[in-house]
Length: 156
Image (cartoon, rainbow, N blue to C red; front, side, top):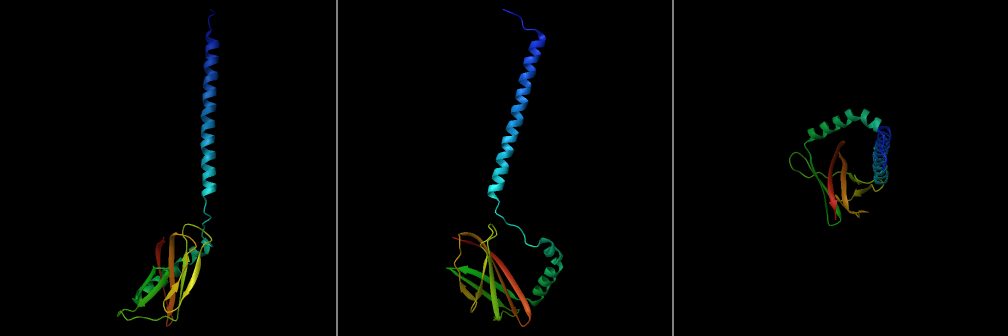
């Protein structure tokens, strides 16, 4: 039997180490490729339209919310048995009949499914294109005062 020299042994160990290092990098590369593929395939496309403009207009949103709170109105939006309904009361619990109420219906988890309906007599029949989470945002005005309320619902 021939003896293995120290240089031959260290060369073999060096090759093993290089092979293990290469395999480790390949595993990391494969995991990263899987993660990138999953991220690309699961992207819903949801983004905010005009984010800069919305950021600049934030003070207007805050002022509108404060004005709405000062009115003391109490709104309620509901969805039951395929019908969206909206009611509005003043500080004294007296019903307010707005001129026009629109409900924007958005899907917070998926782009391209949003729509709106105009309520007649505070109600409208609605058919959702998909089951799951939806947001109802009623917007109305009465005697020059704007009011809005939102509510998330789950359609089954």
